[in-house]
Structures are given as structure tokens and as C-alpha cells.
Length: 608
Ligand code: M6R
Image 1 (cartoon, helix red, strand yellow):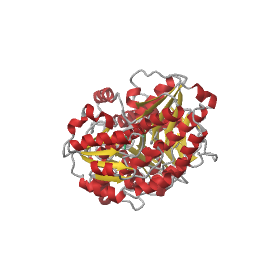
Image 2 (tube, rainbow, N blue to C red; image 1 turned 45 degrees about the vertical axis):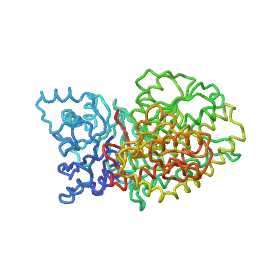
Image 3 (spheres, protein in one colour; image 1 turned 90 degrees about the horizontal axis):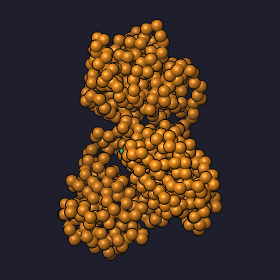
Image 4 (cartoon, helix red, strand yellow; image 1 turned 180 degrees about the vertical axis):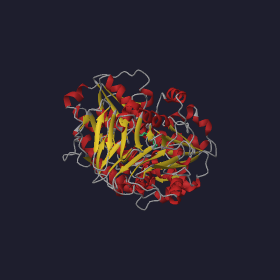
């Protein structure tokens, strides 16, 4: 994880670097630092804790200079302390790094024997030593390349050198790195939001590439020194999209952006006859789709929950077997996939290390690959031959919200496309679903209108120690997602279960102190869910029921009711999750936890 930024131009670097780090703080926030070249030497400031601690250091000791690098850290090697905060320096070289160097211990030992001294426990510090050692009669780019040939691992790296006040060198392997192309100034960052205030023209670095960045331009080459020509791409995200826009937290803003995010994700994809969808970058022909034996979905965290919903959708609408696998498990279990399968990788960031590794594993096995992703041209869609982009806009809150609902919308469209191509989805059913999809943004608006009632329930249960979430069928992954949202931002223990599983074990947990959130909407599981609620009530559990319309049967069983708008069963997950996102948000906000940057987490998990 970690976020890196860099600037070379004519403006003062430190405010630009701090602004960039603020937009990358979601990637890690246990310490931060800057290095700025003042024309003669490089000055370094670092501080443990959030960016505000570094801001305080800069207020008393400002930094001058138009070329610099910065870092916000999520600790992997070495405790989150000032000493371990980046940048790290040795000799003439200063570095910031995102990634993990696997052979750092051996290299450190060798360097110690040669008389080097280390001032941190980080793996990163060896890079400054290795590069400085190589800086004899070669350019900075050559020194960096030579040093990187000695390390195994992942990195996005930015390097400053005392000898040059007008340049940075950056390199990438597996960790994300984007170049921002400005006029008379150029920037680098781990992610696009850090660049948006300065430019929307970006170049995505590929693995095993290195670039020299000056105010006049960027020069990219591979590790063999061959120059690479790559034109910038214009991103359609605006700086405003990465602001809080009057909301107390990014998560709150992102929950409320869902009607717009869904409208943008559906835009231009629903055919005018409402019987099919057009997915430009999913280029499989009907003939190839008919040959598919199986779909395998790989993802992590919330994206995996979307994948679980995807299994219900594709099995029901396209009548094809679907497995949904955790990417971290898939990659280590000799998976069986081949040319007649389609592997679908779901990822908001497109940079999650486990999902990317699963994609690469699947690619080696010669299968078809589709990425459902929110970040244009990030590593996962680049590694797949087909892509289906969600248009949620930048998601900054660590807890995923709008990315999740747009991923499900993408999966509904994929299921429609596969069902139509395979000839198993009738006109009327397809039309019914496309009609419902068109109405979805409006229905989500209605779901958001219940926020005040949900906030009151959240306050009532804010001191609970545990929560259970139960649901059936296509809503079961939403129980998992509701529980994940609550635990990651409020630190309250929560578990999601299929309601039918309760009596096979978890019912033992129920007593008068256990709140149980149940999805009891009017669908074909309704009666069964009600029986499960009766079992919970009989053991004094406190039931919070999500229901389509409160009826006497629900009123008898549940202490609290959250009403949700009705839609067709295939779209219910997107509606029901809104209430659970709001419930988690308000519990956390009431308890005063750090909603956008919860402890121990980072937005983009680019390490294993
Ligand atoms: O960027 P990705 O969708 O690949 O990220 C996957 C998970 O790390 C992510 O969904 C995580 O579980 C979120 N914090 C959940 O809110």
C-alpha cells in the first residue's frame, strides 16, 4: 500500500506534494515524509502519525525548492515511527517506496559488511544504499536500474539525488505508478486523485519500467535501457470528484453518490429495445460465449461479495455454472481453468495484489479474462483481454460503497449479455430487467431517504459488542457486506450468515444483547426468513429487519424496521446494501471512529 508523490517544475514543491499526499492518505496513514531539493541540497522532514503531524513540522520549518518527493506509509517492515517513515537517505540518494523487497535482509547483511550504516528497520532503506553505491560514472537512471537488478520484490519508487535539483527518477514493478503530464511541470503519484488538481493527462507506467522526470518532459525506458514511447491519456475524473463536497466524510459522500455512479455505469450500455446490453470492451462474440463451460470470479473483500452476487445473477440469467473465489486462495491452489472458461476479476482499484496475481495465474493457464474495474487502465484491466469499467468515480473512503453497487450493476449487465448470447434469456425477461435497471438510480435515491431513521437505530445499537447479519439467496452476500462495513469502520465484531445456517451453530450466540440485522424483503425467501426471525425472537435476540413494506408479521418479530424500496429480485442487493452502508456509517460516526481511514487498513492492498 503506501502512497508516493513527486513534483518537478517551477512552483514550490512542498505544498503540491502535501496536497498529493492528502489525496493518497487513504493508502496508508501511519507516518509521512517529504524530501525537497533546494538547489544545493536535499532537505527531509518526516513525522509519525497522520499527515497532520507532518503538516505541523512543515509549519515550523518550511521547505524551499521546486523538485521533491513525498510518502504516506502503511507499515510492512518496521513499526510506524518517525525513524521508519520515508523518505530514506544514504549518501547522495533519497528514496520513497511503495511495495515489499523480499531479499532485503540478505542485501542489508551484505551492505553492513561493506561498512554501510542503517537508520531504520525498513526494507526500503537498502534501495538508497544500493543506488548510491552504483552512482559512479553513470547517470542516475542507470544507477537506479543497476540497483533494482539486485532486488526481488514489488516497488513503485521515486528517487532524488543531491547532484540534480531538476529531476527525479521513478521505477515500477507490480505497485501502481502514474505520471501526470503538465505544462512546464510534471508529477508522479501512486494514484490519479493526487494529480487531478494539476493535470488530467496521465501515463500509466508498466512493470519493469523506469522514467526520468524533469519539468520539460518524461522519458520512459525499460530495464534494458530501450526507450518507450507512450502518449498520455486524458482521464475524465475532475478535481471536484476527489473532494468531500460538504459531507463530513468521504464515505458519506460516496454513499450519496450512488444514484449518479449507477446512472453513469449504465449510461450508453442498455440497448434502446431494452432487450440486451452493449459492453464495448467485452469483445467475446456470441459464438465464443456459447462455447463457455464455466465462469470463475476472483476478487477480494467487498469486490468478492459483489462476485458472490454475480454467481446468483449469472447462474439464474445465463444458466452457466459460476464459482466465486477469493483471489488470495485461488492463486495458491492449482486452479483448474482453461480455454473454455471465463475468469472475471473484480476490483475497484485494479491494483489489489492478490487479484492481480490470480489474473496472472489464470492467464498462464490460457483462459479468457475479463476485468470489472473502476480505475481506467490500472494493472488488472491491463492484464485482461476484456474490460467492463464501472463509472463510480474516485472512491476515497477506505470502506467501499459506490464501487460495490456499480460492480453489481456491471454483473447484472454481464449476466444479461451472456444470457442473450447463449439464447437462454427470453425477450420479456431481458426487457423486465433492463426496465428495472433504468429505474435503479431513482430507486436508490428513495432508499437514501430513510437515512434519518437508520441513524436513530444506529445510535440505539452503537454500544453493542457484536452484531449478526442474516439473509437468504441473492441477499446473503449483502449480509456479509453489511457485517464487513460495520466491522471495518466501527471495530464492532459482526458476522454475516445465510439465515438458514443459523440453527447449525450461530444461534448459540443469540441472547438479549445480540442485535440481528435481517434482510426480510418480499421475495420468494420471505416466509423462510420470517421463520428464522421467529427462532431469533424466541431466544430474545434484538431484530432489525429490512423490509419492503412493514406488515403485521414483521412488526410482531422485529424491534426495529428499516423500510427499503421494492425492485426485482436481481436488483435487490443494490438497494438493500444502501441501508446497511448507512447503518455502519452512523454507528461509526456516533462512536467517533475514523470513518474514512479506519485503523490498520488501507484502501488499496497492493501487498500480499
Ligand atoms: O480495489 P479492490 O476492489 O480490489 O479492493 C478489494 C478489497 O481490498 C476492498 O474491497 C476492501 O475489502 C474494502 N476495504 C472493503 O470496504
